Figure (cartoon, rainbow, N blue to C red):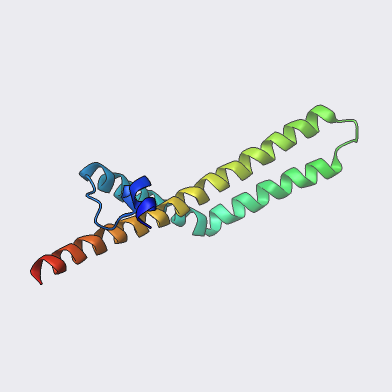
Length: 117
């Protein structure tokens, strides 16, 4: 285990975090909160579903030789899906940041308890 800690000292609960790291973690947690609000919003869910369905419907109705149109539809679908995935990634990154914040707090509590014993 010490080899892992040597390679990645930030995994050590007693790792001395800087204010910059804590500020970045707080920013990521806040961004995750906003991302989760978007993802949980029924309007957003309807928007994503309706746009994806519109692309599928237009693709299905297009002529087999409508290569440029189908290519444009594929790109449109990728943009819609990519935006949704990016917001999901913000939400997941925030979960990791919140876990790291908790790890830092636990390390500080353990240090304080060890110092007072």
